[in-house]
Length: 139
Image 1 (cartoon, rainbow, N blue to C red):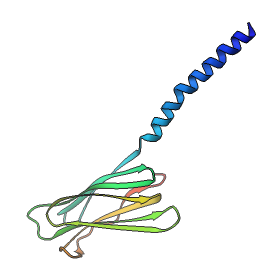
Image 2 (image 1 turned 90 degrees about the vertical axis):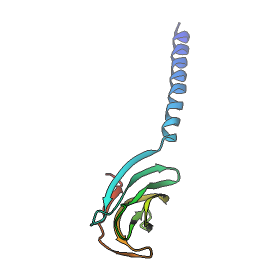
Image 3 (image 1 turned 135 degrees about the vertical axis):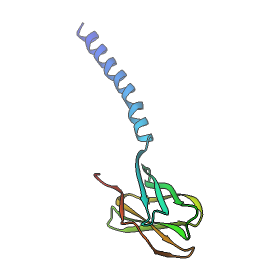
Image 4 (image 1 turned 60 degrees about the vertical axis):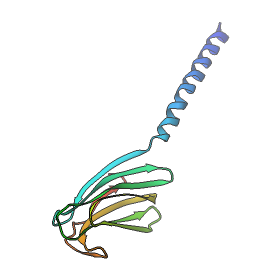
């Protein structure tokens, strides 16, 4: 009787572990996603928004940069981030007409900020937003 009870208990324990393992495996396969934006230039002619995805091997930032029609100049989007090893990273995108989609990896980071500015086809000339938090560790 005792052996039968132990055998039934062991069977239930093994069965519950078998059910729990696939659930844990599927959780790690689903990346964590945070939305950011919109960030707008000071003259509101440029705008950006998107998502930050935590997946292997680190973070991926993606989104869209918009240049509103009928406005002179181009929209510029700058990112700056701090890595876990205290290093820094930066990335810049621009569009002079319509929408530009972008995606880039940052590795593992502590925080990232974005800024939308106006400029010409070669450089930023001003009318920048303040630096806006896109994602930060711990909220």
